[in-house]
Image (cartoon, rainbow, N blue to C red; front, side):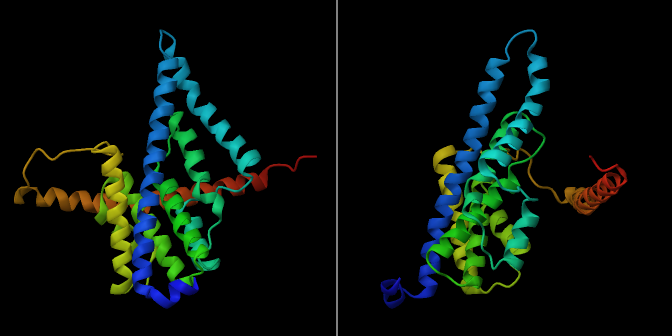
Length: 262
């Protein structure tokens, strides 16, 4: 650390860390996606036959039970609410994220999704990448502001790798995690996102989480439909969190009405 302080400027050091975090986050995204597809292929091959639909009906339940067992008895931690817990760590815990989150979300989400659970890989890989950035920042004794930047680098690299979209990774980190950013801080973020995408492209090619190709050219006549789509998507983004919050409150009230167990 003394040698680094004497010979490497903080700005350059953050760029090197951004490269390193982008590579590690990209590898984490590749491992998570590969684990899910491997587990899915194993289960599908096992369920071949006339009664295969029965296996597919019970697979999600088995995945949830296994996830609960791993969480409660192996990892021994509360899983939290993904991005919400991440924001809490940034604002209330000085951007310090536990080391177990560098692999715990990968393990539990791989089991749940691999068994057909109705969840996504976005939040788990964001938490994983952010935990990688936070712990690397703690390892090299960076302050709160720089640790937060590395959390954004990890999230950007992970999003970029799993979707093969460096711009989306940067925008996600800026809009969700980082509220105060300068040009000097923007550079490590962008570099991390690019390296995450490079790792994914090198190992997976075009086999990303959502793969598509545009076959129609853009036409100005499509603009009204694009505007309507944006409005509908915005309304849904407001409706879904409100619905989940309402269901949570209703569940808590229901639990309060139930008799206490002896």
